[in-house]
Amino acid sequence: MSFAPPQNLRILFLDMDSFFASVEQQVQANLRNGPVIVAPYTGASGCVISPSKNAKLLGIKTGMSVREAQSINPYVIVKEARPELYLFYHKQIVKMIKNFTPFVRVLSIDEMSIVLSPSERNFESANKIANNIKYNLKQIGDFLTCSIGVGPNQFIAKTASDINKPNGFYTCSLKELDTFYKPLKLRDLPGINFNMERNLNFLGIKSPTDFFKANQIFLFKNLKHMGKIWYYRLRGYETDIFTSHRQTVGHSFVLPPELRKVECLHKILSKLAFKIGYRLRKEKLQAGAISLVVKTLPYGTLKTYCRLPLVCDSQRIAQASFHLLNKLPANFKPIAIYLTTYNLNRSAHQLPLFNCQKKIEDISQLVDKINDKYGNQTITSGNLLDSDLIAPNRISFGKPI
Image 1 (cartoon, rainbow, N blue to C red):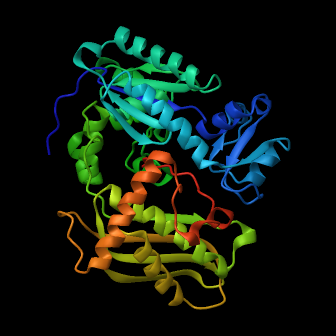
Image 2 (image 1 turned 90 degrees about the vertical axis):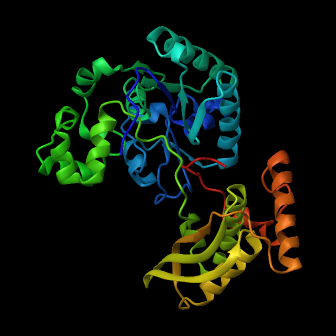
């Protein structure tokens, strides 16, 4: 494995500050002074997916339960997530960024990176671009802010974007790497979770500086292939921007307490199948197998799967999911559901064997075009008309379609 030599200030990384909560405060000015948290549902067992900037100052963090957040501040305002609203602002932000450069890579609904041109790889140019982005972001929403980091690779630029949050700007050149890592903790580095931190500590690596100075042979011996990746990543080589081959396409849904009933699962599965089919068609993929996983009481986790003729239409994916659901034991209390397609076909799209299949796929493609132009579910199947009452859209932290 070899990587191109690192280059100074090559990547600009943009991270929206408290994006979902900030959008709620943008559209509801009366929320701006108080702490706000966004959760998939507002019950005490809901999970905080976006605390506002003023909520973070109180110590409220992403991943807390609503109950924990309310114990920190009983006056915290809990808002149920509105994915379509956040996606609307996301699209405006992406459109604005593309006015600056075509070299933008959307990483998630609130993160994106830009490959700077050779003439822009200096502090003055990067700072000017960052200021222009922040100025134009205010034209989209006066309460929206972003933090921007610039570095030799995406990893360092992302790390830099977290240093002066919120509304920050920070750059790190190759010659500054040693001092850049000194004030940081291992968990400040993207990709270092609790388990990896523990493993690194066992190897005598207690800080990012220790990690940066570790010998390549030592890292490879103890961390295998990922040791080599980390050795180059920490030194500014680009190890994270590549085109990956997708192995699965799936969606999941956590049921709020009032909807933890088996009879609700058909609507939820229909909604998940609709999303999966859309993504398969967008990426020109066909699925050859499907799995269903349901976390339940009292059985724990139930799993089942089946093979499929190569499919990409939502109707047949939904039918397969219903077949899998019927294979599970009766009388359980569903807590969360995961529907995943795999054995993906990456070859040229095969023509269906039967005309009826061809018609279904043609109709699906036409519906996609209309929904892309006029909005999600402008045209939808009848069994999805009231699906939002049972299975409202949740936030996707991956790359928006």
